[in-house]
Structures are given as structure tokens and as C-alpha cells.
Image (tube, rainbow, N blue to C red):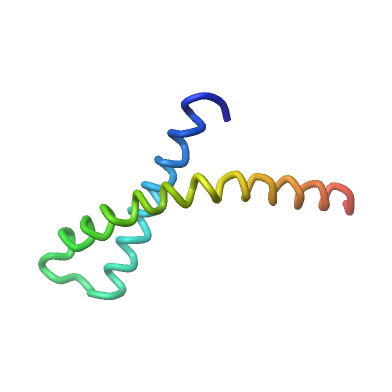
Length: 77
């Protein structure tokens, strides 16, 4: 990935993942109280920046690991 996409992709991917995971965990922990959406959005607002930071570290590592696995599988198959 080149240019601006290198920075935009991890932020968007982290946003989607944080949105889904905070919704699930909030629901698992609280059920569906009257203030569910407010609590979910609060958790999401904290999680998204943390997830974006983690994505900038994790994506290059995952790419390298994927390349190694594919190379190994291609060598075996």
C-alpha cells in the first residue's frame, strides 16, 4: 500500500473492528440497558484510537507473517 492509503487503511480498519468489538463486549457485559448506546459509544471512543495505534504495529507484522506462511505452503504443496 502506498501514499495516504498506508495511513487511512489502518485507521478505518481499526474503527470497524473497534465498533463491532466494543458493541459485542458492551452487550455481553451489560445486556441491553436503557443507556446501552451511550455506553457503547463511550467504549468505542476510547477503543478506536488505541486500536488504530495497534493496527500501525500489527499490520506490517501480519503482512510479513502471511508472506512467510504462504512461502512455506507453496514450498510444501
